[in-house]
Length: 285
Length: 305
Image (cartoon, rainbow over all chains, first blue to last red; front, side, top):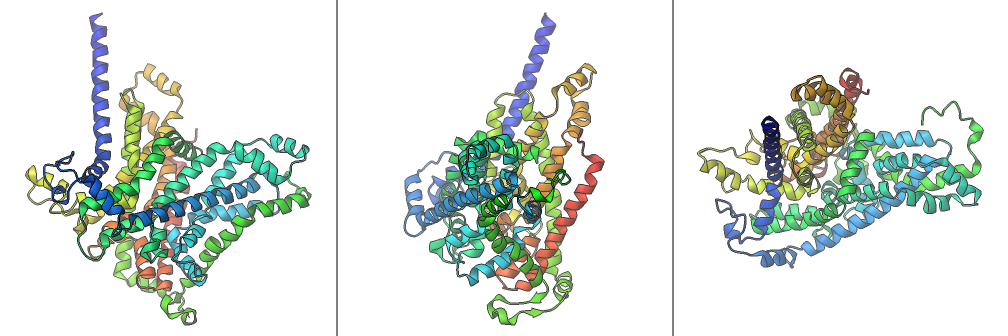
């Protein structure tokens, strides 16, 4: 009896110690972000005070955030641009990829396999390789330095077509056949049958694409030149590089918080889809 | 996709289906041609030319392989090339090892594993620009909290992190590992969950220790996941740009420059479009060679039941 309790106790101690170990790692993963949040609430003079005040001794939250959103720092404009870029990029991407994915998965047309292979093969090409010609092409169409140009170049991704085609292939053909017997046209089958059935994988793709677009730095860096067109990421980085002046760190951190918050919300709300989507995509792939 | 080739006679394509199929892919294909396919061809041609963007199309000059031979003699290029390999090798190795251990710990019997999993994942979705800036401020050589802490425990001369020629690349590696660790861990958790429980149960009955189980069962059986992460993660390392551009800009000197940054600077800061395109193609060849090499090598260690 005693021995059994001992073993049980030992297991419990082991469990507590392991949990503590993983807990410390998890907390240290978050430390930079916690420091960012806490610094964004401080007055500039307290930013580098040591030992670190995790809870500010003098609060300057309202003033920091209103300054960042106010006239001089333009974050309101950056926000608007980021929202425009993400919204149009995500919606058009989903429409284009689901249409193409449906055709490649369920319609038998000439050269479809060969075309799909070409699309798939381009996934290996690094983005930086096509950036230069893209820049030249967009300049000659005069759509560089515009949000719409940025949207256009971001919506023809092979990954989305691939992901949705893979999923749509798993929808049984009999469902489509029965739709055809009822006289439905391809467009009706696509919009009334296939799209609703692909909801889960479309949701995953929406979230992933939103994260990519919101965090996109290289695209805006290359294609946007006017500050009024800047997205959050590029606005934030220009804040650092600025005009050689050393930036106010408390404001810089407030700007960083502002750039991260929307994604954090999306993640908290759609945690299951995000994590589930990544896991299944990876294991199947 | 491949195995239905024999069973598919040519007449099977119906006229209506052909039209419908092409209409469905039309919007995608047009954009794909303009923004992806044509640029690839264009870039290939540019690699053999000398052209300053500002001088207009009329001044494109074909120079054959001159760009490539010039690249090999360019210290900025060879340094970037070396750094790319070092960065990729250490980043991917650390990511794989740490995330596999973390994933196994999270799946073992511990408290709050769901909360810990979420906490570890958060850096992955955080904006890379914002988090790179946070690291940069925290690692500020004189005032940053990290160095103040190191000095307070008696290290009088702590590293200068992003601004030191010696530490810039390792610091970038640490940042990149931190940023993507959550993604790797989530994928590993899914991979580990797909290992049949019975195998573990049988090994416990046989008296295998935890360590033996980890090395003899977990590692071989999770190898398809490791392979997936290795291939995709390595490609990701070769393309890493944002954090380097934001924090060190490749400096000091070329100490933390990588190929992607070299391409960017030559194209969009010096407007040498031909030279930059040639460098981009070398980057592609490296990625291509490494990926092919991995595919061939996988037979030796990847275990598909």
